[in-house]
Image (cartoon, rainbow over all chains, first blue to last red; front, side, top):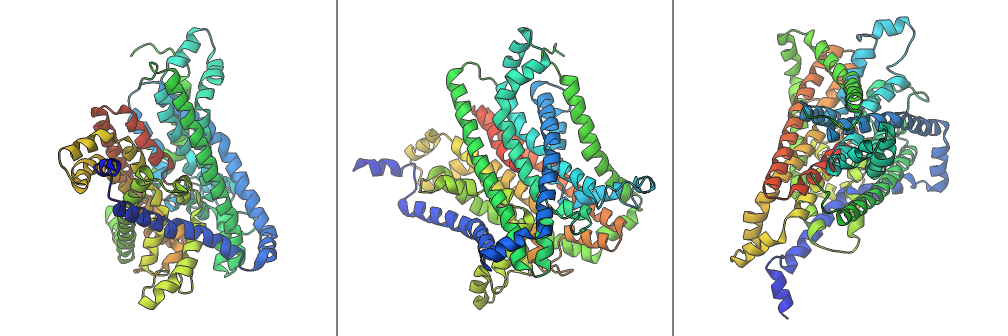
Length: 291
Length: 292
């Protein structure tokens, strides 16, 4: 009977624990679980055939295709520039490093509407390059290129932000060893760096991808809302909702919600793998760990 | 400077700086330039117009409320997730990131439907005369949803890293549990709590997608600043939109600097206590998932 009293000193009484758990879980239930459930209930409120019919509409299919296309185009840019920024910041010392990190974070802080507006000001008809673009018959704003550019802007920080602390924690020794053993820069990157950062990179890519597919505000400003042309899935949700087509709107929303769930699962799995590997490393090389 | 062994410094930094300049810095500079075509008095007129002032009040008021709600409940959620065990804990833990993964327009239509007079939650509140959807209260609900993960994710690693010894010492010295929490634990987590609050607040200020569906969008009452920018754009008042965007940009930059300073403070406090691993792990999940 001494165990409970022993625990009391650094744990809360049972009723406090139960109350806190109930309050915390209740909050999450009302703010997270209920909305998530509501998406699917609303989408299926007209039965399966209405649901599948809404998803088979040509405009819905087009919106899905466009959303995937934009995310796929943004992906290689995010990987290349994310790795490149993380390499420079994590492995070298230079002046203005913290300023550079703050600048990389900037897209997180800027309102999506402001991001869209910024590119409208540059490439729009009254913008800096507007007249020149018109003269050469190039459309950027209210067309696909503009939507890709704002997506790149918004997703830029994810990969770099994920990799910088990871690569900093790993230090330089392994890469330095590879170089002094005669590896070329490319060999070092493929054989040493990439295997070390692969989970972190994947984690960043998953986050960037979710954001790219789900972005609404910034894409909305530069898309011009041309049906069947510049409508991504999140914009399609809005249009149908404003037309009081609840089933169609929630059907499209349910696809995005499923995507969000897949993202959460992938995140959890990758995070778990990362932890596992870093624990393995910690156990194997206790002396190698330097900040 | 010491001789660099590793290759690719010039290349990687060069690529980063060029990309960052072309994609982010030059476009933002373009915004400032457009706004600077206004005289200071004209700028002031737009930035402090009646509708603009009302929109700041709505945006900042609702964001402040949402961030405060999240500070309180986020602390409880983080505490419960770190300290207690219950069935389905890992599932709940993964679900916390939902607002980062769910597109804002989906969140918007769903919350509007839930809190409308005939929705699951709105129906329960109606008899009490509480209207949420299409009122400023709806904005608070939407902003609470989208900024929910920040406080939880910033606090979790810090709570995990508190060594049990200090609590044991407090208990041994005769402190009650509440005293231990107030005098020992709370001071240790305040910087992280403030960081999470700042991140949630700055995310909420810029939010557009989820709010417009539930807000009702009445000028002077439930119109947020990002929406006012859009409506100026739709009236072809590009300069007016740019002026308001400038105001928002400056505010978000200041908040970003504040968040970074707070994270730096957290990191330094922790490293001065000898727990150097905390610094990076505490700062990253929040920043990396920030504004997803």
